[in-house]
Image (tube, rainbow, N blue to C red; front, side, top):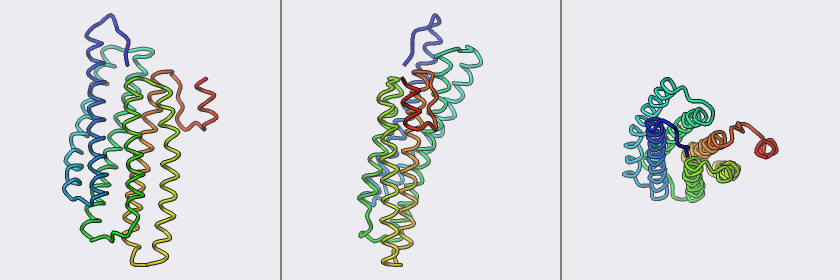
Length: 233
């Protein structure tokens, strides 16, 4: 991720920040894996594991943010180092928010289990979408660690698929509710879950955009596919 500096201590500080970011990302990935299993198996114990990790993720965000502020104030980094620290700051915000969405999923699944939600609902569709979002988080962290622009772009492109899956799932739930009013409450719960998964995909995309920014100095946030392609030439 980084080039060597004249100051070995500076290198150590940047390495420590990068290591902590990846460890934080690993915790968020664990939250997502537990949440997906809990959703698929309606397993209450797995939801509790998701929530148990939430505090650790939050602590990492605070600690890494503190380290970034310290390095910036003492080292006054320029060029690529400054981009790296700015990029890391964006990454940890999105990781923390992805973790929040996983925790929201866990709480919603707990309510779902407590209410004895009907098994006839299309939970498998939601699990597939959640798996895709989890894959995006894993891929985007790898892209950021290696500053791999092409891998980052693949994550960004995959977000459109997650969005389409969300929209199709919502349409399916609306059909369920129209056909049977008793399904309204559980379907609304599944919509909350689906939205949390869609947002996790958004956070993966944001991390991928941060990787491009660090690697190339190009800010492609909010860019259309055409604008993105032009910027990366």
